[in-house]
Length: 329
Image (cartoon, rainbow, N blue to C red; front, side, top):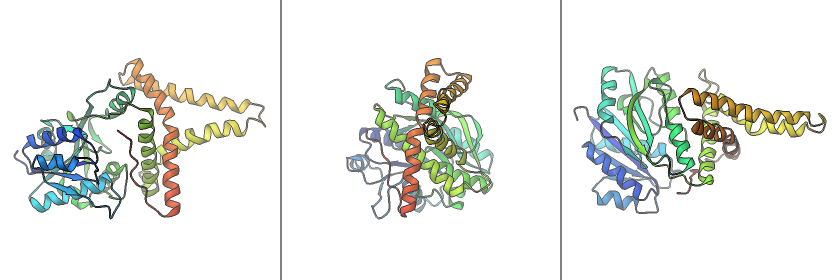
């Protein structure tokens, strides 16, 4: 590998999944490190058995993926000060063998590109309905974009310039960092290439619900931090959550008595919203089955997302940070 690239893998209680992630990173032949966020399983042992350096985060601060990524990047740079790029990989993802080489062509051709990401693929999309939904969510356009996800190849100079990820964020840290990068004149790119292979392992409705609670929390925190700025970061998303998660049905029932039930017609807004999402999904080339499922769960997702918004607001009022919102595996 010509360019100086390092790899940061982060994880927490990922079990056997982590072994495949670590093996894929080792095959790249670049310096790498595993950062563990308080695992109680054998994650740390698995890494050490493979002779992979481990950074163990202590519990003096809340565990977050952002904090783990920062710690990993800092460790790599201390060991390899000449590093130019860092590939971040979540511990439940397998890095595609050719991704870094393809992403480097973009980074090296344009000095203002800070981040390159590719397509995250769900390894077992038909294992459950919820895995299928995750697979649909991973699809992204190619070219210059606003934000990346957790897996991405990042230019060290840009990463250091903006101070890395905001370690306080329990979710949504990638779009937040990308927002600061774009403000500083950097660009984010997505390429038409497989980047990582992910295993959501979502088999239960409760896991899907918790995932959406976390998303709602991220939207609320992002809007609070940057919503007043020109980008209006996640203001629209948060407003939509409040409208559909509380406003429509709240108004329908609150006004039902004085309107003699006419206000209940507002509830028709939910199937109309679903129909609009379905139409957009079909325009993307999705099957009728996928479009129906995606539309239904997008509408239903407004309710756990509202819960996430409320969690953030309640904790902010009490002056305390939200701990990780984790789905059981």
